[in-house]
Amino acid sequence: MLVDRIRVTSAGFIPKKMKNKMAEININPPEPFFGRPIAESTRVALLSHDIIVPNEWRTSPLTPEIVDEADMIIAVLPDQKKDLLELYPKIKAKIFTIREISRWDGYLVQEDYGFKDIPEDNTIWNYVEENPDYVSNIMNEMERMLVRAYPHILEHLGLKIES
Image 1 (tube, rainbow, N blue to C red):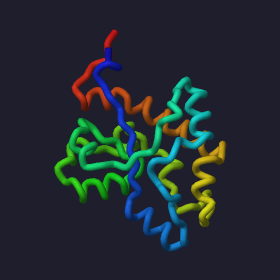
Image 2 (image 1 turned 30 degrees about the vertical axis):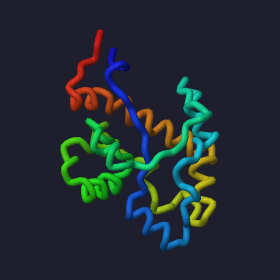
Image 3 (image 1 turned 90 degrees about the vertical axis):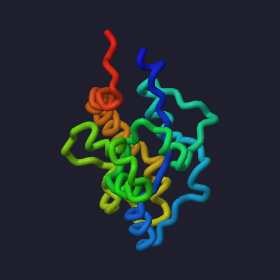
């Protein structure tokens, strides 16, 4: 079974461009940024898709070990990929954006850190983590992207869908 052959890890990474944009308008990430539990609105949205996240789960930073061990890295934001390629040039063959791997060319909500629909103050984190409409839009978008990406992920990993 594929579920026995694939291990998925999640880790966070804020790209330089986003950090700089946030600094320009005096927005600071929550402290600590990592080690925090999943936002309740995200937990609810995932549960609506029968995905259960254990209460012990905490956000984690992307580490060199995770990068080295990964067979494939999917960055949500194009600037994450750009920064990671600067840090780890050897990963070029195994890093993709969700847009690339899903072969999607439409608008993506999560790429909007021009903050046109997001508050330009320190309430941003409450908004992006707890606003049910925003979270739901991101979750629906990620689901569409991952469903489209699934065959391309398997192809990259050299796996086939089992009948």
